[in-house]
Image 1 (tube, rainbow, N blue to C red):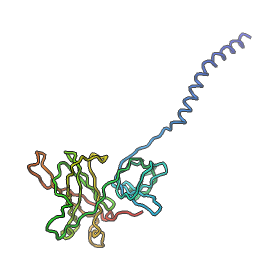
Image 2 (image 1 turned 120 degrees about the vertical axis):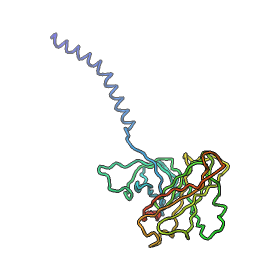
Image 3 (image 1 turned 30 degrees about the horizontal axis):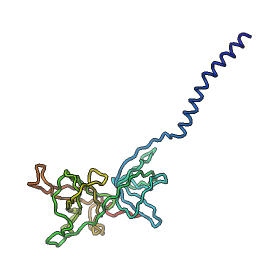
Image 4 (image 1 turned 60 degrees about the vertical axis):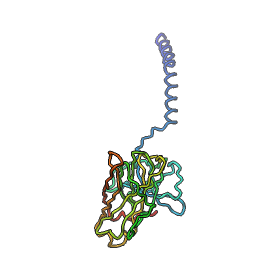
Amino acid sequence: MKVMKANKKERKYWKLYLLPLLAIGMCVSSCLEEVANEFRVTAGAFATVTHDDAGNVCLYLDEGRGIVTPSSESDPVEWGNAVRVYLNYDLPVYRDLPVSMEDEHFTTIVRGPVHRIDTIKMTDVAGLDKLPSILGSDTLEGYYSFDAYRGFVTARVTSKSLRRYDLRLSYDSEKFGGDTLYLRLHCAERNEAWNGGFVYQPVSAEIPEFLRQPGVVSADSLLIVMTTPIWFNGGHDSAYIDTTSFWIQNHRLTPPIY
């Protein structure tokens, strides 16, 4: 009888200990249901936007990162007639990595904000004795870089004065020879600050259509050479013509379609 009484007393104390633990367990369980343990890797990329007649979009990412269809969980985006954008997307998870991601098509979450990139047409200055004033003739105070993917050249300008530029690209079709395209980056400084969501100011331009004709680019790649005038670091007393170059594979000359 004493043993039975002791057991009942111990059970009474165990109930006192268990009640708070059960309450904590229920709280943890409910909290876990409300807060998902989400793991993702989000990356940024430039992309070319393609549209179908129903308003759906398909995104061809630069740097050979693949082709993205935004999932239903993506942030709402007013794509409108956007051609070139900078966006953030969730990287896909693979058990076995594909040999090449360039033409890999996957559906993933696109996360806002999505920044539209100014998209212009290159100006052919062949046969012109004087350049059109719309191109701009200011000297860049800062740095620039460029690359070429999916049928577009994208230049990026960083201004030390934080001024906004109107950016244009020109080429001379009569001087094209072999497999080299010479481009000139033109800047027209505006009396306002750059405030476009980037440290640098980007602009994209479609690669000239004549390069896509059969036999025009004979090799499997095209060398694009870009020049622009830049002030020396010492001040505005002297400038130099800076030159940089980039190789693009032949099959990337044409912009994609949906």
